[in-house]
Length: 388
Image 1: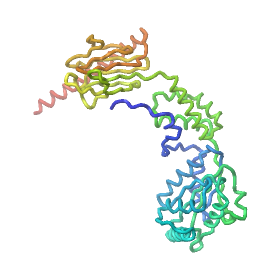
Image 2: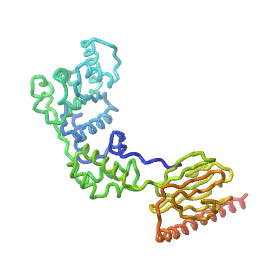
Image 3: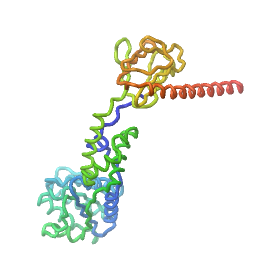
Image 4: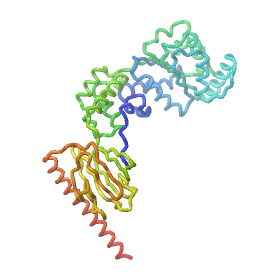
């Protein structure tokens, strides 16, 4: 139960972000609606455009994962893609086993699979990203695939995504079969200011918790990031990482305790604001495996501006700097002694007389709650003995 380090900002907005964490803002939902409608269209073809960082890839990948439960789906980056790589990747993602074959035989395997799936009313979907970066030979192959039919029904559906509106380029001779599909066209739109605020705060909250969300992404910061990014998710993510890293650099380091025995460091436990039970029990937040330590020995109350130690009526007591205490506001580098173990407290904030008074009130309330819990447990135990 020991505190773990908070995830880095990149886990919310960067390369380590969970791809399953999708914020459903207006433009994303609109694109998904058109993608769903495309699946029911006889032509089964959609062109999705938008600048880099507009959310095209995220939208296509998420939609493909959703529909992939019912039909074969392949999502392929078209950048410098050769025709052979396209076919190999399609068969691999469609889970069609194939050995090293000539190009002609490989196309035969693909064609038979597409025909079989179409006959089963499971027409596959091919998603090509970065279409503007595809080679001329690959576009020729895509045009050939667009003409495949089984019983007067197209055998492959398409989603083609790129940074520009390339609907006009489909009228070129090499892409005439795709043009005949009369594809649906849709352009990604940016987030508005309110969507940007929800986007930033939701993604941060999902992986970092809500303790500091108002400090990292208050409304004015979200508005500034929205204006700087013009609402495009990619730019918004980059700016959010910088903002979060800036906050982490200027934010005070969380208090921590260094647990040692006989001079050997056993663990270092970070303590964001909260309550931490110290004891021998495995259910303790900070477990100290020592026969001279009670199951629930002491309580560390970590505030934003102070750290308080409360002894929980332990059998052998608690000492700080070799002096036995019942309660104590801890200073930096104080050493708590528990049996054969030592807990050195680091990064404790300095406190004022006002803080000490506030903690005295909180301490009284904490001790009262502990006494209430003990009395309730005692009554429960007595009642149980009476019924035996």
